[in-house]
Image (spheres, rainbow, N blue to C red):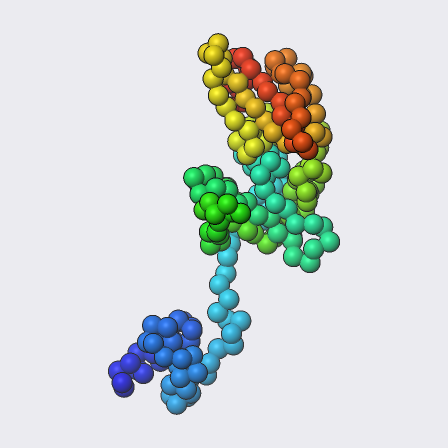
Length: 231
């Protein structure tokens, strides 16, 4: 109708895209563009409609308690693309029940990215976020959060940081109470990372049990009151 065509022109001039207008008025994009051309309204190039996403590219530039925590979490449970990839991105995908961690992570890096929603190999729902940012990518590599979990070893200043280990434990560890009513923390991962964790525990006189191996994955347990400091 004439009213619809006038509305399409008005909304396009206000900033809406031909794709959105076509969907809202149940017509094709080419029909939408034709309506605009009849009214001598020049169509904007498609790149004009690329959605902008914002984030704090400097989130990992400096070491703070919060950035150390999230570096630890990403070391345990995140993905960082290889250095030779053209696209430098980081990714964090967790089980749907842990979606609050995704919200907290996005809040930390001030990310407005749309949430990823998919399922794992067993069909369990997951939630996550992927951010393309050369600076975030490089800063994480500088801290030791590199491509491939088996290659991740924190640099010395992080290896001595309790907030880093809190993040790692939240990412790939667990907290439980023993029969003796003592808190116990367990951290899983590859041997190089857990050896650094053991060194950290010894430097603080924490009670740690020897490393246990389960295939390629190792586990270290911490028990007693000191473990509460890591929770």
